[in-house]
Length: 592
Image (tube, rainbow, N blue to C red):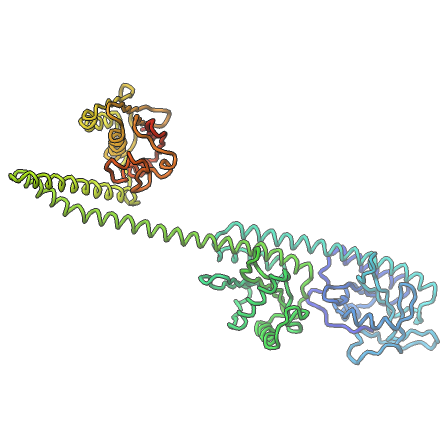
């Protein structure tokens, strides 16, 4: 087999077992029937080499040839001077001009004494092409049993075997490509499955590592991410390797190459022999040296460099490595890895979005806690001086003063009491937002609460000639909760109804039970609330845009407190209102 060859790879064929067996049978047929002592079948590989995958007739030849690769361009140069025997190409040894050390396996025989004697350096091959004329393999024969170059009849027989070998090689390569696609599709699905089941970036990359290493048969795997100032680079490597140490120059080069690769939508293969893949990246001499030194330092034969991204954004790179002596990367693997780069890029972006949202939630929670603490502190600090002011105003009420002074004292008292109500409401609101302040639940008879609240508001209602009607079933209506807080709910609702109802109107307080809920309803015939105002009705310090409502004194905290209390009790509050036609507030609470 006088062809120039590279040493066998660690994985000599990576064909499926049925494909190898079929090619081996054809090679054995050439040695057993067609009259040749040695036959070999090679297949074309993506790295432009022809790899020997089946050898028959000689154990010595099999050990020397199986897995060996020969550049296709070298084979074609040798065949260019061949005699054309149809599918067969014969190159007499005197036409071959190969340097010493590039002859491959040469049989140890002496030619017979005949004009058509077979010389050990003669070359007989059959290029195997598919239906489109693309070279897919090669059938090579050596050591004819009669020691002679084949005659016409033997050539016809070899032609038949060459046709069979061609069909078998095409079938084997198609089967290999299909198996490769299925394997890589499984790897891609595993990556997507692992990536979509996690939200944290570290978990996404960690879970994908094993699937990538197994699916792509990679010795090492790592991922570098970039694109955001607060994001540190993340690196992963296969379990039996260390995380590679990257110099700042190498890391910067990787980022630059990732952006170029993403723009080109290609995955690139780097090796010591090819530090700038096909020159497409246009790396400088210094950059190529960085690549070569890095590969040699980490002991990698080749690496598949895959950009990660989504849309226009390149967010990182995925690197898959194979050790020195292992097979190279196929176009199918590069295409599948690029698809994984898209999926993993989206997962990285999703994880970053989640991390940003998580940080934002933490900041909002901190801010909300600070707000509650500030409100509680300010309210508490207001209470002490207001208590002092009101106390001294009460003392001054017993003192005879001029009418103008009395008027001023009354105004001061009204203002102080209003401030005291604001402070009380703020303190209550802060308690409602305090997660440590849990509801002390017990059975509460809401009918009793309703009667008490109606009595407390009776004077205010009578001054406005308002009718307050209570509709409730006979007997107790019991809910689970804190009696003081539930009292505050009805107090705020009823006082609002009294405040915003026209003189002589009617207010209805209805209490009932439906299934597992107690329903408390407060209806009035007052000003009503616009749809726009209803959207913000339970917001702290919100005051209606209705001028008539704004004219009434209030803190804008009453309904916000009502909603907080209802939610703390596991209930909900509903409102139905229309401008000029009154409002109905409905509170639903878990029944005891």
